[in-house]
Length: 74
Image 1 (tube, rainbow, N blue to C red):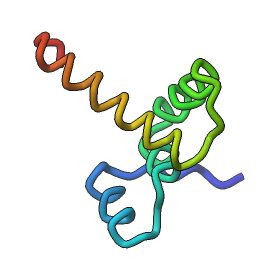
Image 2 (tube, rainbow, N blue to C red; image 1 turned 90 degrees about the vertical axis):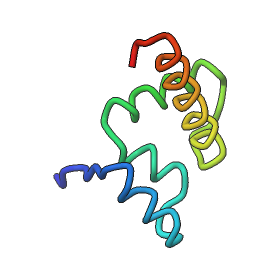
Image 3 (cartoon, rainbow, N blue to C red; image 1 turned 45 degrees about the vertical axis):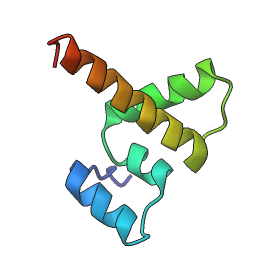
Image 4 (cartoon, rainbow, N blue to C red; image 1 turned 60 degrees about the vertical axis):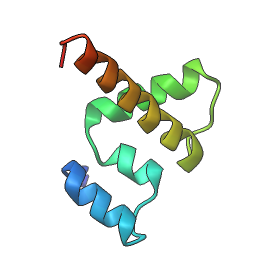
């Protein structure tokens, strides 16, 4: 069984800019934690896995990070 490949944010952004990856690929290759969180996010919001819901998830994660930074938690 092949091991799943994860990349840094910089590499993922480059792959998206080159058109190699969409948002779903970004989420699935960011980290195993994000894969699990994304699956829960889709289930909790009754969303199907795909580029649109993955883009929503990334936006949600950005908002979480911004809030944590404002609160001094990040």
